[in-house]
Amino acid sequence: MVRIKKKDQCFLLLVLCLFFVMCESHNLNYTKYKQVSNMRLERIQRHLDRINKPPLFTIQSPDGDTIDCVHKRKQPAFDHPLLKNHKIQKIPPEIPKLKTSVKTDPMMSRDVVSNNSKSGGVDWQLWHQNGTRCPAGTVPIRRSEVHDVLRAKSLYDFGKKKRHGLPIARRVDAPDVVSGNGHEHAIAYTGGSEEIYGAKATINVWEPSIEVVNEFSLSQIWVLSGSFDGSDLNSIEAGWQVSPELYGDSRPRLFTYWTSDSYQATGCYNLLCSGFVQTNSRIAIGAAISPVSSVEGSQYDVTILIWKDPKLGNWWMVFGDNTLVGYWPAELFTHLAERATMVEWGGEIVNSRANGEHTSTQMGSGHFGDDGFRKASYFRNLEIVDSDNSLSSAQDISILAENTNCYNIKNAYSSEWGAHFYYGGPGRNPQCN
Image (cartoon, rainbow, N blue to C red; front, side):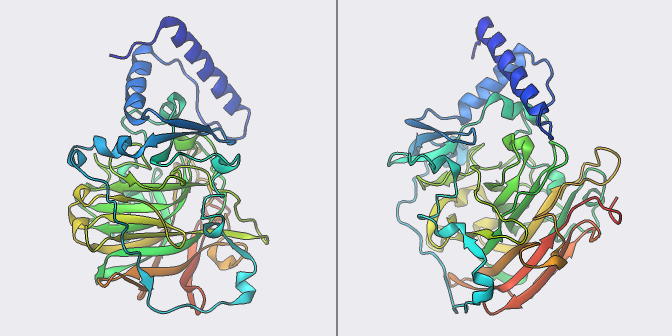
């Protein structure tokens, strides 16, 4: 049993109080301070001791994050009962290649800066700014702190999506999608009879404003299989999100998620539970992305690929053109152990109606999709991995948004950007309330 000395408890409570007061001084109250019992602090500390593995080296990021460099064989993944005997995949998988190349439009390209291409795709993470790197044989893991857990509804909910955040494509009639506590989306999707073994997209990065701490705004890829109205949905997800509850700030951050039972008991964000096996020593999942796009200014984007290794069956994630981040082992899944049946790309926000009206939390840039390039956020080069481990431009794309007065989506096709779309919105406005 973990015991916290009385003087340490008092110090911790003082630190928490100061932290919360400091947050109160900003526009967004990240955590409402209340007295925390010693018993609860002990439970939280035991949980943190399980997920925060002993580091070989620690790096302090200028944005306040602590990055622990953990031996790759000691990372949280191997606490999973299905992965006790799992061997880290040493032979790199063959990264899918596009069947046909795309043309370049100089008028569009001159205003786009790809965060993927900067020094191997890592300078966009703030913890690299002082030039320090994790040693070979370790992986960088963002450390979770007591105040991170206290912002969550409960210890059980920490690092997890709520079930009402299910992917939208087959849930358009579900009441909680449009209810006061619902999630709202603007997405493109494809699936059905097509055999899908992965998906790719380049995602425009912005810093949308969030109205209240328990809301978020994200832009991501969903790779899905299973039943949308049952308890066996498998989902692998990656993209960027702004989530004050999860991270304690309003910065866009690289994130991952997985579940094998419709967000009930399995899975989590990033490395906040066992499951995802990280292999890259230079990219920290959950770390902030910088710089971000600005209206009528430079546009910054990141490229993410998720696909199934045809040889070993693990689902890998690539950042940029060819930077392997890690993988979700095949053992974690039921339906995805074979293939995916649907892919979704797009934005999602939480509308909690905290003041009895629609949230003003922004999706994407906060502009509607109709506003187009350098105003609205975009997903470009939507691609699918087929059974031959080849990439091709996504076909038969459908689009969907529950409330187009609040957030919408406009899709298109071009020689350079392939299948793409603009999406987003400001939330509350005269037509959205």
